[in-house]
Image 1 (tube, each protein chain N blue to C red):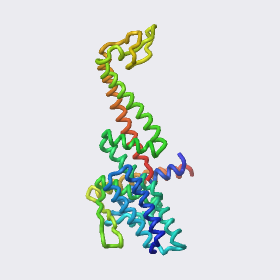
Image 2 (image 1 turned 30 degrees about the vertical axis):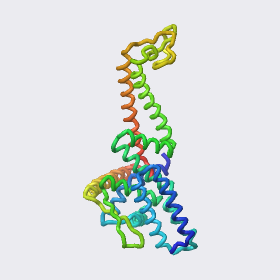
Image 3 (image 1 turned 90 degrees about the vertical axis):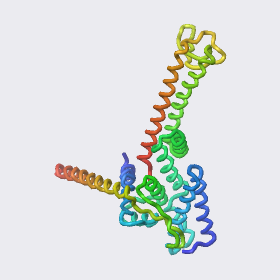
Image 4 (image 1 turned 180 degrees about the vertical axis):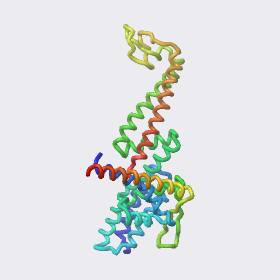
Length: 115
Length: 201
C-alpha cells in the first residue's frame, strides 16, 4: 500500500468523527464546519465533498439540518447533533481513544525492543 | 469582495454545471437544496475575501478549493445513490448505483460488467424454463451425433438431433435462474457496501 493510500484511508476513516465533533459544541453551518476542521486538521482536501457527507449524516439521523435566513446576506444551513448523533459520537470517541491507545502501546513496544 | 458581472457569470456557470450534473442522478428537491448550499458556501467565501490580487484569481481560488462541479456532483451522487442501494437492497436503487459507478469509475465499470453478465445468465435460465412448455422440440440440452452436449437452451429452427431432457429442465432451470439472480444480487449489494466503505471523501 502506498503512503498516499494509507493516509487517504486514515483521513476517510476519521472524517465522520471529525464532523460530528465539529458540531458537538453547538450548531454550525457548512463553511463554519469546514473552517473548524481546517483550523485543527488537514482532513478537508476538497471543500465541496464535505457537503455530501453532511447530507449522509443527516439522512442517517445523526445530524439535523435547518436553513436560517437573515443572519447573513445569504441563507445558511445549520447542522446540529441529534440524540442519535450524540450517542454515536460517544461510541466513536470511545472506539477512537481505545484504538489510539492500542497503536500507541504497539509503537512503544516496537521502540523499546529496538533499543 | 463584491462580484462584478463577469464574476457573477462565473459563479452562475459553476452552479449551472453542478445542478445539471446532479439532476442526472438525484431527485429535484435534493438538487435544489445542494445547489443552494453550495451557492451559500461560495457567497460566504466571496464576501470574506478581500479580492486580492484581483477578482478573477480570487474567485478561481475559491472555486478550486471547493472542487470542480463534476467532482462535487460525483461526491453527492455517490453518497446518496450508493447509500440508498446498500440500505434498501432494492433492485432499482442497486441497478442505478451500479450504473453510476460503471460510468464514473474503472473498478465500477468492470464490476458492473461482471454483475450484468451474471444477471443476464440468471434471467436466461428463467426464460428458457418458461419457453419449454411452448417449444418442447427447441428447448433443452442440444447434443451432437455422438451425444456431446453443445447448447443448453433454445435453438431455432429445431435441430436434427432431438433435444435431450424432458420437462424436468423446467424446475432445474428455474432453481438455477433464481439462484443465480439471488447470488448476483447479494454480490452486487456486497460490492456496493465495499465501495461505500472505501469511497473517497
